[in-house]
Image 1 (cartoon, rainbow, N blue to C red):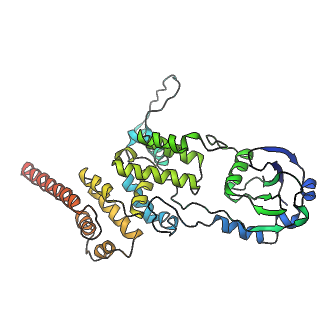
Image 2 (cartoon, rainbow, N blue to C red; image 1 turned 60 degrees about the vertical axis):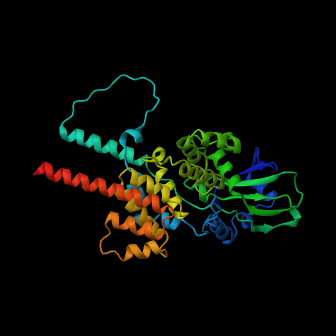
Image 3 (tube, rainbow, N blue to C red; image 1 turned 135 degrees about the horizontal axis):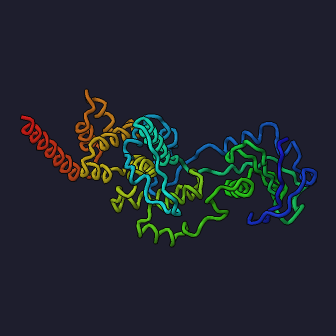
Length: 365
């Protein structure tokens, strides 16, 4: 059996006391049969990892978004929509003063250094997964009435074997009534933080995510800080992460502050969230006002992928060529809620494009 530590944890799971041996584990009923079981634990653990229904601010579809989000085509669309502003991605960073280093490079070496720097910046734009909140598995692994009221505290058994991912690490709890259950996700994450701590993650939810503090930070438009901190503190399917990020996305949409998240790792998730909940009109309008017609087209194509049965998907499918203007017009005519504003913006952009083409023709002639 894999090496394990058994931690004596009190009712609120707020402290971890003395470490017990496997012999003591057997004394409280955590035998090989109960701890590993013949497939029952693995089956329950796999069911615990399955993504379940979403509870978002819009009360939208209960479908699992992650399979669609993880598609290569969708990831490509979101990467193009996000954009790449090197100055914004790199951003000002507070670092201690160091002596400047100068290098003499050939053209080939310079190109190599630039490509490596570009690759490092691209890594910073890796989007966090867009997932539904998890649902704890409450099915008991075993029931041992003889162990009822054995102690005044519950016992948490944690597998600390090397090479096991935290999401797949076995953590079980011996309850006061003698039942052996899969540990709730919150308990598992705290045990993982004890034995395999991650930099920047705290044992308890930071106070900044409390209702009043979060509302104050959102009112100050500290969107990127909130999202970065949420990525550091929570797993992508944690209910707290889902609630915080969805709330920030809705606030960004209401404030039309899309430029604050553009060229960041969170812009793709924002676009996916808005399209998933059929709330992308303001984002599309912002793209048209900024003459980002290719991004607007990608946003509409994303809408067609997520909602294949929509009228927009049918209209775009009938187009012989998926030209950007034609694709955007198909969405405005079929799905848009801000139809008048989008039509005016698209018309203004087309007029500007015609004027630019005429001026270029005159200059060339």
